[in-house]
Length: 226
Image 1 (cartoon, rainbow, N blue to C red):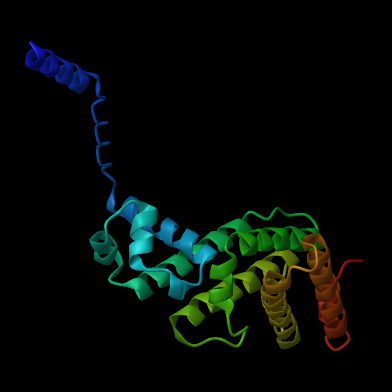
Image 2 (image 1 turned 180 degrees about the horizontal axis):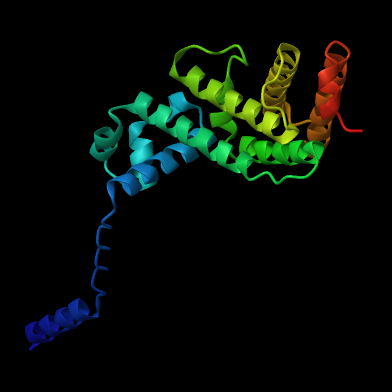
């Protein structure tokens, strides 16, 4: 009787124990979507940590993928890092394309706001991309950074109605873009000035540079605010 009662109790306990939750079905993603998920995970990690401290295993875990899958799509960490930086550069360019019209000065201020939104969201990745300053033009990382600079130059020309800048205007605009990059890196390091003040400073610097250049090239005067 005792053995029968004990067996019955064990059976009841087994029935009372909740069954393991079924594993969610593996999502079927397109090649492009799966690749983008891995890049998104890498971008997030590179924005939070220095690249040398992020491993392929970290990216795989963040994306819910296998280590082998990361290697299948990118071949290695360097290729993944470059893909992430290119994707970040494309995101930045897309944000800046959305800057609305109006006066050139207003468009410039709006563009700076979007630029520093990106800087803040991708702090570590931004620093890695621009480490070494505007003169860093070597290697594939340098090419990505230089592509962003060329895009910014074209965008400023478009907003100011310039089709072909003369040497003085080209140098002035490129110098200002370098100042923006340096200011972004300094702000990330110290954060001892509020962003609106920094953005106003950079707008004022642009006006000062253009005013100085206009003394040597009167054609520049027409893009200055009245």
